[in-house]
Length: 283
Image 1: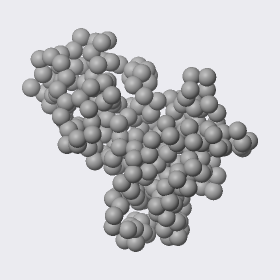
Image 2 (image 1 turned 135 degrees about the horizontal axis):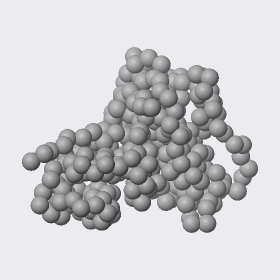
Image 3 (image 1 turned 90 degrees about the horizontal axis):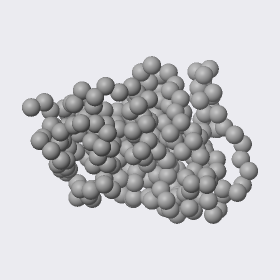
């Protein structure tokens, strides 16, 4: 029986502006999503019926709150497929701003279509992905993309934001709902300049002084240890350092791998660290 072993990649936000709150309660944003060579692994196998789910972590429920299960259900409702066994080996932490759950869902959508020979265009795959979560469509193509709307309006950008990425992941799970609610109360009413992140990359330059993440204004005061990690990273003078999404991952982009490794060596040992490379857009 055919089995697929798939990599489910993480991403970081390079810059994130919160534009406004919509009538449906979601927020319009402007950000760059950069896929990284840091991943969970997923084994998919056909079974006679239903969805069997196994994982190496104890915080994922075997129900529709789990985006893996939700992805299978969406496809099973629309296509004639047998059952599926999902074995997920998690490495991307929850609440880290790296998009692990969304990536898992997109990887399963693509994997099931492969297993059962469901022929769908990328746009059709993204429509299914959007029904699962706002970040899921990004992972259908991955690479480097500008995200607007609630993250579902995507523009692929050739190449990647080059460098060696040092990820620092404290053992903190930051609620996205809390982050948006807190930002709304404190800062959403303030005027802000429009930033066109993608246009900055067209000339081959990366003027990162414009690439702010609005969530820093509320996450750093609430979680001082995240502020300390940012200070350490910025002290090593990377070309960019920030939160990913609403955190808790802090990362720096360095021109040289040796610089990233030195910065890693001075990060407190209590934090998980990973040195990874960006994945280029496949146009």
